[in-house]
Length: 90
Image (cartoon, rainbow, N blue to C red; front, side, top):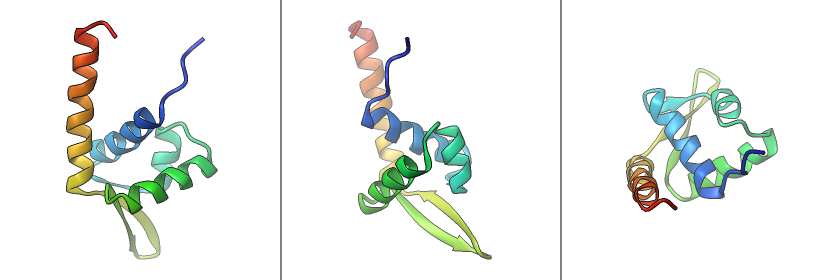
């Protein structure tokens, strides 16, 4: 059975997904791409906005989430940690 993702892994997955879509994405893309329920998605998006990792933008009646510099930095640092843990077999 597959292990559950940690909170940090879910945050990374959300931010990485936004980054892979040119740094701007609709919430439904995050919902499906992040494999999250609507309630969990809302919780994580609110937390990421409050933390300054993403910004919510409305354009022509549609909602988009945009990655901030802090969000890009988190992705960068998370990848370094993942590489280190794999190098040590953790």
